[in-house]
Image (cartoon, rainbow, N blue to C red; front, top):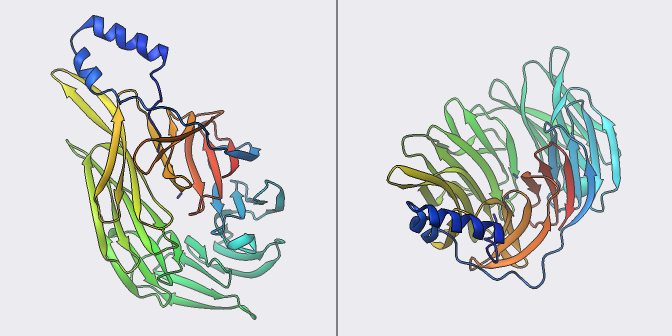
Length: 389
């Protein structure tokens, strides 16, 4: 989940009045005008985003979309597990007390949940009706859970550099493995047939094979890190923010085998990045400080790069406030939430491709499948929408 925007087609009358007032005031007026984005004509046909479900929330829910984009799952703080079809209808509602982790297979045919109970952790694998296929318990804490898209294998990482592998083909079997590194949250990569994970001691990320051996590992610099996959697990996207007098924001792209394709590092804050479904493009939005004498202002920018790190375009401005939501293929471009309240997109050339509906609340983030068929939208008030795209 692991969301960009487009500049406005025409400057609104309110913005025009504000610019006029700034111009009269003098000082940094010319500087402000120079940094205003060029006007772009709005699209003729806005993209239709269809909300199929709306539900309340408090911001603590775990959200997931199945890899095939046919089902959506929500796990709340009381352990209620909800599974929805792509039309918003409820397929399953079941409570698993203490659950706080989950992952879902294609079509919601199976799911794995992890939680805490008396004396330690538990992992439960269930079918589409909520019936338990396997239940495992142990001491300590569970760190991450994952399931393959076809639902035939599932995984759980726990304290003490241990991993449980569950074979669910005919007669369920399990094995406990010692891992080369203390794995945290995990995500299954079909291409590598391995688990992408992040470690805290030492800080870094990499791939762990299903035999527990380290495939590769990258040490990360101090700061914040967000991991995502693209091209059905063939690529790993690491978005980073590094603190300092001149903070850096950007992304690094790796193959599933650990080969680095590119690193893009810019002076800025609050990065959000996403890769296209085929892995050929990466979009990044970030904020940067513009300084003129004793005056400064924060500007948000968004751009697109190739998988080799070549910049295709970058746009921004003082009145341009995109928040990256992801990439779409039809038309190819960047999905964004303008000023957090209007959904729109830029095309592959950085032009406004479409402007969609106004959002009922400021958008916090989206959770979607790689092909953008289905998406959870979380709003600032904690409420949720399920979108058919």
